[in-house]
Structures are given as C-alpha cells and as structure tokens.
Image (tube, rainbow over all chains, first blue to last red; front, side, top):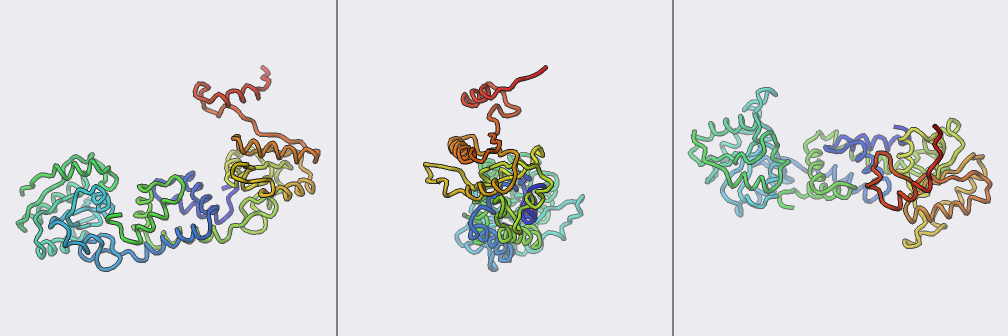
Length: 201
Length: 201
C-alpha cells in the first residue's frame, strides 16, 4: 500500500488475519503499536509466543491447560459431578462467563460433520466414555451447537451414552438456531442451561 | 478470569490494550491465535517485533522510515514540490489513501497544546524551517486538526512561515462529504458558510 513502510505493511497484513479485524482496524492497531513504547509491543509479541508455546490440552477434558490439567479439572473437587460436552474451548469460556454452571467439561474440538468428513473416530469419544465410566457423573449435558452438525453430534452422543445408564440432557433450544455457543450472550446461555430436558433413547 | 489459563489470560490482557479492542474481541483474537498453527501466531509476533525494531523516523520529514528516508521522501523526484504539515503519521496514511495529493509531508508528531504543556520547542519546527529554506516548495499546506489545539498550531505555523515568502494554505473546514446539514454542529456550519466558494455554471 502506498505510504506504508515494508514492515508496517507486513504487520498490518498479519493483524488483518485476526477475526473481525478489517484493514482499517489493522492499520489503527499497527500504528498504535509503532507509537507505543518498545516494552508495550514486546509484551504483546511475547504474550502471543508464550500463550502458543505453553498451551496444551488438558489430559482429562481437552480444554486449554498449561500443565497436565486445565484450571477447571485441577479444581474438580469443588465442582459439581456433572459433565458438559462441548465442541470448542471457547464454548467452555462462554459457559464459565455465565457463572451459572459449576460442573466439568469435555471438549470435542469439533463436531460430527458428514459433509466435512468428520466422523466419530475424529473426536475424542473413547476418552470421554472411559472418563464417564470411571467417574461417577450425575448428569451428562450435551451442549453442542444448535445447528445441523451440532444436532447430529448430539444425536450420536445420546446413542453412545445411553448404555452408560447416566442421566443425559441436551441444553434447550433457546440458543438461536445456526449460532455457535461461543458467540452467544450470557443470558441466552443461562436460559439454555435452565431449560435443558431429559433425553430418552 | 474464570476459565482462562494463565498465558491465555495474559494474551487477552495485552490484546485488550489495542485501540478499539474490547475484552470480547480480545478473547476471540486470542482463541483464534491459540487454535491457529504455530507458524501463523509466530508470524504475527515477529511482525510486531520487526515493525517496532526496524521503524524509525525519516530524517527529512519524520514519517515512518526503515532506512534514513521514508518511502515518500525516497521518491521525492516524482512528487510535487508542495509540503503538507501534519500532526501524526496516520494523517500521512489517510491523505495518501485519498490518492489526491502528490506532494511531500512534514510530520510534527504532536500539536501545540498550552493545556498539555506542549510548546513550540517540543515540535520539530527548526527542522521544518530549514527544510523549507533549503528546498524550493511552491506551497505549504497546513493540515493540522480542526480542533482548538490544531488551530493554535496552525496559527503559530502561519506566523513562523510568513517570513519565508512562500504560499501558505490551510485545508478547508466544512461539511463532511455525505453528511446532512441538519446533523452538523453550528461551528462547522458557520465555517462552511465562511469558506464558501464561487460556483460557475
């Protein structure tokens, strides 16, 4: 672009790759970084590198962890013996933000999608099943998205969970159809938890 | 924040310091970075470091440069012999984006502000004066902001530039393009009347 120096141009380009950041915002962010102290911009660069390097998946639930266990599993003696199955780590954050759920999670890092070729073997379902067999959960809450793939996943989960003789619920369809849970407001998520219903095979 | 791992929390905090980025956007950006490839997030971190390390001020005009000269001054034989005085480097980018100006710039990196204690000695005015004396500009366009400090700066620039016997202009104040007069403030409407120009059929 006319007027950009080379490295400024590269920085704007990299920032534009972030979600919801258009070229104008990227330019504004880049100029802010160039004008702030070297410490400030270095702190951001280091935060990116460190977060990426240090973050792995929790061995129990697959949510973000920095050691073997995520902050939620590490604190599991204080959490309800309820398991909430979600598609993505941001779903955990969104649900935690409501302050209305105090159980544990299982993060699938995806959903069944016949069109995308994602089958049951691509999701950590065996790990989930053996965890449920080992630990004595009072309830499994299926909190996959309320779109087609999310519903397909919920159906499949219901099938494989039914033999385990544990209460299975599905969060209510208070979530607007076609939306990802990670992008929904707290109140709607709370309503959806409140309105969850028994699932029979 | 509940549910954040430590380094994820730090990353969200650092991203929130960027302009126009609220906590929700910062979270979304951070999760995007955690879920993207290590190459992608490293590219962004490196772009920040590099842009910051390599960017200095152009020796002639104070705009961003990676060597001694900025991309605009390096190309000055192809630019008009007109000098546009601006407050900030982003003003250069905004003016370059219009594609309507082909002259050179002088970036003050600030404006006179009696309230903030910014006086003439805090701005690179000596550098500007000797540059104008050395080079044969046809016109100096004062493009400081149209707020109080910007006007104070414009007034002062006019005073110190007048002895140099060069044409001095100030960019027009008026109704922004695409605005309804009914929605514009009194001061701007008054300026627009003041600055009215002859229209020939």
